[in-house]
Image 1 (cartoon, rainbow, N blue to C red):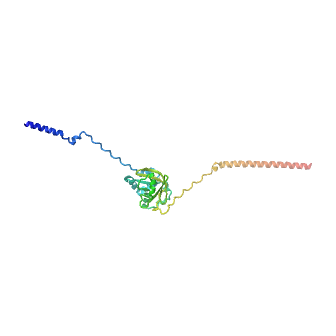
Image 2 (image 1 turned 30 degrees about the vertical axis):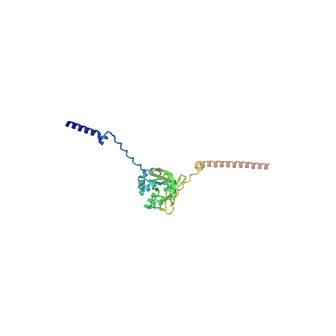
Image 3 (image 1 turned 90 degrees about the vertical axis):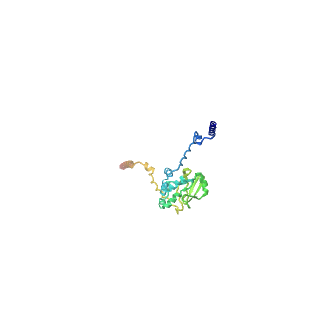
Amino acid sequence: MMEFKAAVFASAVVAILLCCPAPPAFAQKHKSLPPSPAPAPAPHHVDLADLLSVAGPFHTFLDYLEKTDVLRTFQSQANSSKEGITVFVPKDSAFASLRKTTFANLTSDQLKSLVQYHALPRYYSLAEFNKLSTLNPVPTFAGGEYTLNLTDDMGTVHVRSMWSNPKISSSVYSTRPVAVYELDRVLLPMQIFKTDPPLAPAPAPAPDAKPADAAASPLPGKSSSAKAKADKKTSSSHRAGVGIAGYLLLAASASAGLLLLW
C-alpha cells in the first residue's frame, strides 16, 4: 500500500513539472536580445566666425561682432533655437564708403545695436523674402523700433533702413537654421543716425600719363644735331647763291664799260 502511494505521488510530481511553464530565465535563455539603438549624431553647428573670416571679405563686420560680443548672441541663436537666424553682412567696401568718424563716434551701446540691427531672429531662405515683404516692418535682433522693410522685385531683394537701401548681392550660406546674405551697403537706422552719414572723400585722381607723341619724339641730342646740320646746309647754300650773284653782276659791269669805250 505504501509503495502504491509513493508511486502515485511521484507520478503527480512529474505531471506537475511537465504542465507548468518554464521560468522566464529559462524560457528566454536561447533568445537573442534586440540590438541597442545607435546614438543620435551630434547636430552640425555652423561656426559664424569661421564662415565670415573666409567669405566676403567681411573683416570689418566680424571685428564689430567680436568687439561688441554680439557674435556670442548670434552663435547661441544659431545653435540652440528652433527659429534659427538670418544675418545681413555688409562687405568691407561698404564700411569704407563712409567716413571713419561715422562709427568711431558711436557709444558702445550704439555700436552693439547697430550690429544687432543686421540680423533677424529667424531663418529665412531667399524664396521666403517675397512673403516676408508683406509683413513689413520686420523686427530685428536690436528689438524695439529697430525694424527693416524688405522688398522682393523679381528676385532682387532690398533691405531698407532709414538712410540706406542695400540689396542682397549674394547668398553666402543658407541652410537651416543659419542664413547669411551679403549686402553692398551698411544698414543705418534713424535711432542711431539722426541725419544721413556723409560719404568718405573720393580718392585723388591718378596723375596723367605723358602724351604718346612726346614719348615717340626723337632724343633731344639727335634733334639738335639734325637741326644744326640743316641750318649749316642752308647757310652754305645761301653764301654760294650770294657769291654767284655777285660774280654775274661784276661781269655785267665790265661788259658795259667795254661797250662805252668802244
